[in-house]
Length: 284
Image 1: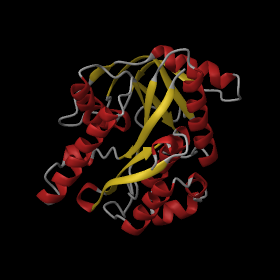
Image 2: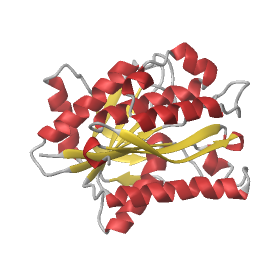
Image 3: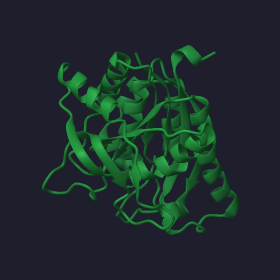
Image 4: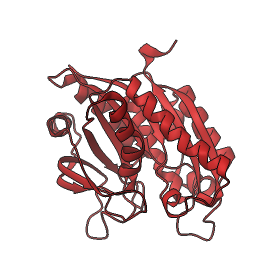
């Protein structure tokens, strides 16, 4: 039987790679250092697999197909988008666990879209290359990583409650898996940011810290209570990605959050928040 041993929220800001020297040096160091801290914390959990919950940015999918939620069950590589310093590479997937999540979901009303061959974008690859890969080096072994994608980049957006349902089903599937797996889950997304609009570069620190405070309390109901209209007004269209946070929080039993770092970085067009989700059994 497997278990979810913990989780994280972290950003996947591509502008960090496009304009790496845009913010002040001290702020850049704090952000890159937060990724290093997450890698160390991930290694300390001693996971055997990682699930990374990201979203499409109208790169992988388009008008021909917009799945509400999808899991990669076979060959994985990426990222498909070219970013300086983020190399396209083959990803070691945990195909047995991914397929088990799909089969388990079908028995409980969760109809996963599946990708038996999947090229991910930066929503997966940034946390994978900046956190999972360094954790592998610290642990001295590979960490198979399963991609999950939710529709929170472009309309129509997945409902918050459905995102949470998926997190709960992922946890139940891991616990029903016939192997002693220790699984960590990463919710990949920025907090406030406005993508492709006149407000690009705006960051709402008050909104960001409000979301992080919800994570610290482990208040999934409060996270799922955000209305799309409020998010768009206060956090921008990019902040719809906090659905990924809801999925990750729901997957971690009794989750309580610990903020690792936060930086409001207009030069990188995003509020960047890093939070560790501790399961109930590990909360003092």
